[in-house]
Length: 354
Image (cartoon, rainbow, N blue to C red):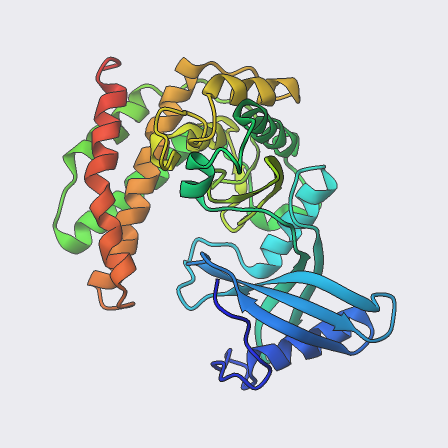
């Protein structure tokens, strides 16, 4: 983490003509009904698409008077078009928090006509770093329990079914989640190919395989769409909150399951199928115990293939942002280097299932 910034620190303009910290204090004062001082301002690690700022808020008067540990969720300069707005992400958080999903409590949505929106949520303790959580047994002393907790929390999310009036901005739910994914990834790959005059045969094979093997659809549910190690907090060995809801939407619940089990998100422990944390058996058992549909390991293979296809497409799209000159970034340029590994996993998963 970066060191906290003092009020006089040189911070860039946020587009409103004001230093972000001062603007945040003003908008939070309106939300809290009393003057607010942000005694600390610490940009948290991660957040390539959105920025998370940890603050110690001191509210002088009103119903929220006192000291509070909050996180402000703001747009980063590298925002992606498919990411939800902060207003939409705040509405998602309110819906899932009310449904009993472990997430940071959403507190205030702050917006004016002078700059970008942001929202405040209660700060939750824990570690997110995938390489630490998958390697360090002192952080996760009981891995089967954590894997089951992750499955159970996902099942609580998947209880939310359309339509939901407060989530109308998500649009209509797809009739067939798998076919919708294949069509979306096909469109994205074709667009990249047209720009660069390139082709990716292994990804083409994976898309064709998924089109042929699409399973009978389940009823759509609310999906996180990035439910994986690195996007949740673990404190004293227990799951405390799931983060980063900017890609949430309606779809087949098995899409989230396949994303969590995909090899590309296992970090230091590829032998542990559930995010490098524990076994798929424990994860799926926790999911079923909390009311999720019974899903077998074999059934998840299809959705793991889709997960690797999606991540490969995202990696190529991120690299294209650098190559096109729209955003010069070494991190974006290097992202495409993972594509051959993802292609290899797609071929391995489909080899015995032509």
